[in-house]
Length: 445
Image 1: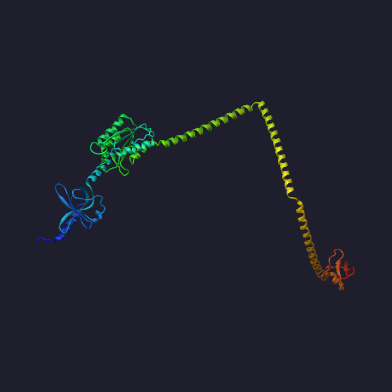
Image 2 (image 1 turned 90 degrees about the vertical axis):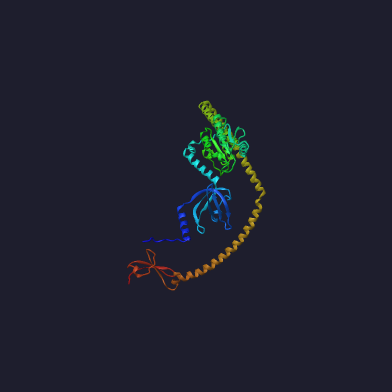
């Protein structure tokens, strides 16, 4: 039986190959030199990467190319990261670039990271190995270029903050061939001679290549082995070198390193003056307290003698007598002054006018009162007559005038209102209009 034949079209073949290429090769780094560079109007980049023996076509699409920090050009050696793919219309395999950087910088950065990890594993960055900076250095050593801006900045800061502290400059190359050896020799020389008690290792800013002398392993070991505390002030604030990690203190700039290592003499003088003033005040308080205590002791010693006590009593009596006389004099003077004031006020305010005004007012009130009394009497008289008429109409006497009588118990004087209150033989009094008479109860119905 003949095997079944499987046939691919060209497009199917290229698609299958492209898929297997993309699956078979993960993202990887490739280093090479740019040639045949083209930037399309669409924003995509097309180029070749080559070395001495081969080349490969590459493409970098607009989304990735827009974030490039370097400018691609022919002849530039670069390091790229991307994936292997196939351009199916022509059946050519290509490399799709996702990231591109300068190969020199990338290599140095990788070398920096590798050295950093190795030195950290060796313990060169250990915090327990860091030394404390002297608060008041006797002499400050500076390892740097004698012609650079860093030394000028440091000297200006030290002159402003503490001009009396001497500065010893160890001139070295800070970049290029031979720079690392000069830096190492300067560190060892300063450590051996001990002319200064703190070192500043510094230079101005620059690229990673410019600062590479401070990333050398031999420099790191020289810093670690130095018995003098070292401040690293290399580059700008964003720059970090191996020397920064090994040094006892890292400063963001050369000027900051000078400020860290030097005391501010103006602030110190102010602080010393404040402390001296506080000490003087404390001593004065102590002397005053001791003097008062001594006086109290002397007073107690003198108080133990009877003669002194008698003299004190006599003196106290004289003092009280004088105080009494003074108080009496003051009291008499105050009373005399008060009488004089009252006399003046009496003379200034004569009562005659007030009396006349009061008399006029009194006369008016008397007239008003007389009228008021007359009115009140007239009203009372009318009211009395009316009430008398009403009272007469209601009076028992009016009833008696009509021939009635009022019977009362002889003993109690209470009015007899019912026959049930009477007893046989009881004496009762009967009130008539013009008199009364007594009678004895002989029959009760």
